[in-house]
Structure formats: structure tokens, C-alpha cells
Image 1 (cartoon, one colour):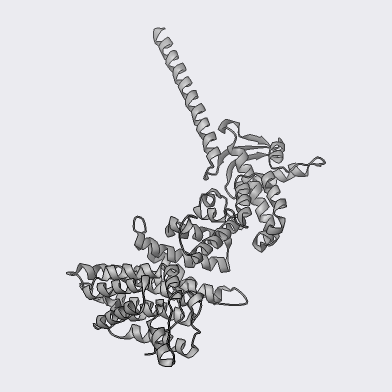
Image 2: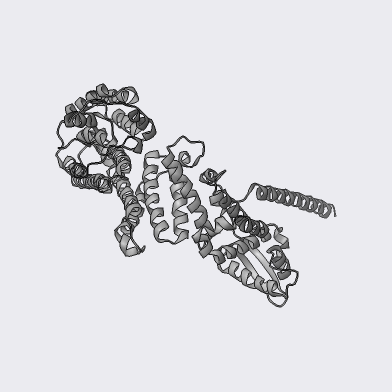
Length: 500
């Protein structure tokens, strides 16, 4: 077994990678995962104690804590400590970067590399020796974080970690199914068994995301990612048995699934499917991913920024996506504030409000930025159609329910379809827009072509802005006053009839 010196997480403290060594280390994952479990805790303790002696500061303290948990067989606490290390790469990267080493010769260099902290050595020498004692879902999260850390330098090794975890969990699931009584008198074992399927879904989803992110093809065909789509569809069904409401552990499994699903549709389309899966991902990922005040590492902030841009683009270009208030209220959009992409939020707000004038102003002001977005320029006609449809919905909503008979000319003026030298073409376009709104079920009603009027009986429910909520509250107040007046009149009439 060769010394484990896979590149560290941060470029600032990478050693020059040894290609042969990396291949051997990738193979060592397979060997480590296939070795039957035996009490290898002593080796893990020895490694942690050596690391605690060789490193100072936060790294030395972390490994000293790990050694204590291993000796006491406190597996849950060990898991939490390992996850805290893996989830704070910046902290431990800075510590390693400031560590000074001395000495000469190949033996000294090899020894020092082995004593330096890396996520791979932590996984290989501490986690894998006791993996059978850990909660499967926690083990899956650890493996996914390590895989993510080494992915930029060795995709093969990153995939190997996830593939071997999948094999391990599937074997455990088959064993549990064949021996349903195992663990009946052992609550800890029963709990671990319950998490085997969610752990499998989690790892499969992370592997699918890895494949989607690293596979390079000249064309994006469904045939190239058939197995990924099959996994996504299969896990969608399985997740129904593991609802995430009120359970943060299962919410992480759902988030991993929706992440792989949205990456698939981002790559192969359609935009509307990506939009739907991205909203689900954000819902299960939690506010810490979307809030601009969080202290996540730079990579996560960058990922959230990219997702915000993609989400707006999909909302504007996706067929059938009309309830834009959903994405407007997504906290992740706040990450675009005071950035070169902030104009996208303005464009989204103008479209969601059906404000044609504001939309045209944004289009003119940000013409250069818009031209740099091929997804928006290629679907410019579809975006403008969506704008006019939502402008019609906004116009109808602004009318009291008893005053929803609109003329073609009124609609044309509200949608800015008329010009000073208009020859009637703007009015002619109104009928097509209304028919389109009826066909996609944004409104219900009828058209009188002779009188050139539209009678609307129903308008699509949607997320309302604060201003629209105030208007709705005012209407409820007017309605309540009318009901009260009607009640008073009815009571007076009743008393008059009784006296007569």
C-alpha cells in the first residue's frame, strides 16, 4: 500500500502529483472497501496520534480529538468531527499552507508528505477502517465530500470512492433484506439499516452529478447519459418512501437527487424542467446555501451565484413557466446584488410584473449583457410572448371582478402594442394574445370578435408582490363593506315586512 499523498484541497499547498502514485491510490480505494471488516481501530488511532504530533494548531487538535473518539468507540461523535473537518476546507487549507517542513532526501520527503493532512488520508486511514461502525448516510456524506475534494485532480479516484460506496450499500441492503430479523435487539444496528437505502440514493445522485459535470462530449444527446436519467427516474420513485419534511438528514438526500436532476436538464433541457428541479433543490438544500450573509467557502458561493443566473434564464425562457413570483422570492437571487449579473433580476422583475415599458428599458440599457446570453437571445420571441401574456394577466387582476370586460383597444394600450402611426395592427395582435392566454390556462372567459371585447371570468392564481397584496386587501375591505350594507338593508326590509 503506497503512501497516500493525493493532492490537497487547495492549490496553495498542492504537491506536484505523481501520476503512477495517484493510479495506485485510486486502486487502493477498491482494495480498502473490499477488505472484510476487522478491528482496525488500532491503526486508525495510531495514525491520528502521529498526525496530532506532526501537526500543530487546528489540525493537530482535530486529530487528537479523533484519536480520543476512536479509543472510546464514540462513532457518532467521530462522524461529526470528520464532517466538520471536511466541511471547512478553507480553515484546514490555511493551516497546512503555513506549516513549514524541513529535511532532505526521498525518505524524509515521503515521511513528511504522509504526515501532512489531506482529505484523502483522513478518509483512507481513519474513516475506512471503521466504516462498518458508522451510520451509512453519514459515511455517504463523508465519501461525497472527499470525492468532491479530489475531483479536480483525479476524476477516476473521485468516481471510485462513490462507486465503491454504492457497492457497499447495495450489498448491505441485500443482506438486510435477506435477514430481516438482524438488529431487532440492537437499536443502533436497526437505525443504520434504515439509512442504507437513503445512503444509496445519496451516493448514486452524487455520482450522477459527477458524471454530468465531468463528461465532455461534442453533442449533448440523451443516449450519452441514459444511465444517469435511469438513475434519476428510479430514485424519484424511491424518495416517496422517505419524505424530507422535518428531517434534515433525509432533506440532504432529496437535495442530492434534485441537484443531479437539475444538472441533467441544464445540460440536455428543456429549461422548464431545469427550473422545476432547481426550485426543489433550493427548497431541500436549505437557506444556508442561498443567504448572501452565510460564511460558506468561495466554491459554494460561486455555485449559488451560477445557479441564480441559470434559474432566472430558465424562468424567462422555459415553456409553461408563468408563475415567476416563485423564483422572485428565492433568497439565492440576492447573491446577484451588486454584481455584473444584477441586471437579470431587473429583467425578471419587469417580466413577472408584466411591465412592458420597464422590460424595454432594461433591454435597451443592458443590450450588451443581453447579447452575451445566448439562451435569452435565442428565445427572445418566447420571452416577449411571455411578457405580453403576463401583462394581460396583470391588467385583468387589476380590475374588480365585476369589471372584467375589456376592449381590444384597452388591452393594446396596456400592453404597449399601439404606436402613434398604428394602422390597427396592434389591436389585431390582441386577439392572438388573448387566445394564447386562454390556451395555456392563464385566464378563462370568452371573446366577442364583433364587439372586440374580452370577458374574463377567472385569472391564474400566482405569488403576489407586496403592492398586489395591498390592492387585494383593499378589495376585501370594499367587499366586506358591501356585504355589511346588504345585510343592513335585508334586516330593515325584514323588519318592515314583519310590521306590515
